[in-house]
Image (cartoon, rainbow, N blue to C red):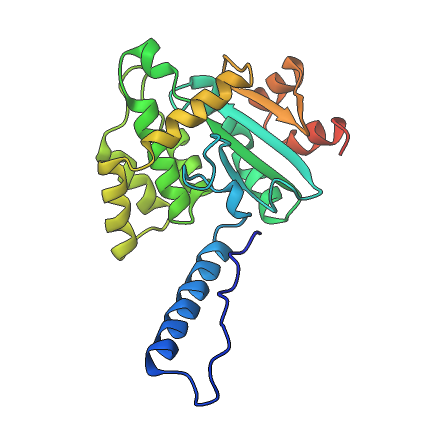
Amino acid sequence: MPRPPAPEVKPVAARGPSAGLIAGVVVLVVALLGVLVWAATRGGDLEAVGSSSTLPDGGGVSVGPGVDADVTQVRIYEDPQCPWCARLENSIGEDLAEMVEAGEVNVTFQIMSFLDGNIGNDSSKRSANAMLCADDAGVFLPYHQALFAEQPAEGAGWTDEQLVGYAEQAGVDGDALTDFQACVAEQPHADYVQDMQQRANEDGVNSTPTVFVDGEELPQEDLSRLIQEPGVLREVLEAQGR
């Protein structure tokens, strides 16, 4: 995980540092420690976190050992309102989470929002933002599972209350839940949601779900197996060369 450089402390005169300099160094050290603690909770390197400030190219949300780790790299292109995406998550979600927890795979979720235009609502964008709020709270995978498990009927979309409720299911409470509610209401990740869709367009992906394993698109036959046959995830990934 890339770390911010340590603050440079310049030598001072023999008479000793001034009180102001000591205070400044303390502030810098405390700030640096805060960044390191935050980064350590994210589960991947800073370039793999779902934030427009750290991934301006719209590279998705990465969970696991990291995008540069020598493990199977899975990239899932999905739209929150896509019924087949929900079926895929409901089929492989638990197994995928176990493999991530074990450090066997790294998964990048490329969250798209093109179905808003097809359906005529803004639910894909809002729920994509909510998933990034969950990433901020350190509960991306359980939130992702809860949201797809309760995907509404086509066109109905999610209410803000529902999007917040999934965070509670994922274990977010107290001040963190208050922050999550604000994140859902204010949509601070709206620009990054657009970036993710643009990145998917540039990748030539125009349907969901689409899955890549180690840079190669998963054949439709294998994707259909993942959707329809719970329990075959490891077998399918191993068949791809890992």
